[in-house]
Picture (cartoon, one colour):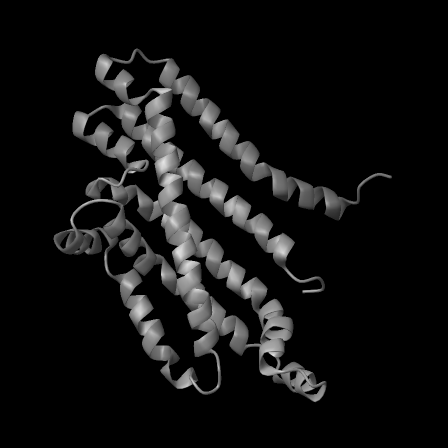
Length: 247
């Protein structure tokens, strides 16, 4: 049976991001290999150095994102309860301050306290990325139709069962939108980890800037962009898969 137009559009919408990312990487590879690289560029633009930078960047992104989810989702649930809603603006204000504060400035302050390394980078990126998940968790839970909650109470559901069987499933789309935003933000700011010797794709970008080597700069920047696009695509798929049926 021939796929319907809507199915074809959905398939194209799903497949074009990875195809575009692959095309960008192929163009980058062709451009770099069309140039005559000097010894300095060759030391940076080699498979081992690039692989280490990519894996380090992914490690930073994953650790920061997991910590953000562990902190923001339970806190958002607590702050969405009727008895604690009055204090929600305070926590949202603190989270907003963390994002409004320049990430590089926060890194500098944390290194003065914790020295350089992965720890200050993770703390800074968690503070920077916690707001979207926290805000969307609170909003997603608070915008649920109160009639549904009352109906669940009438059926004898306990508060915990109402939360896990009614509220959280209905809030999933809004919460996932916040997670997707946080993922992309974290991939972007993780390039700053190089300034505290925590690795990541920022190592390539900064090396290109310091050495005034355009191929190195472009390679680091394009890889960071492609990683952000890939993460956004995977998060979009997760939204579709985890969204409750009928929403």
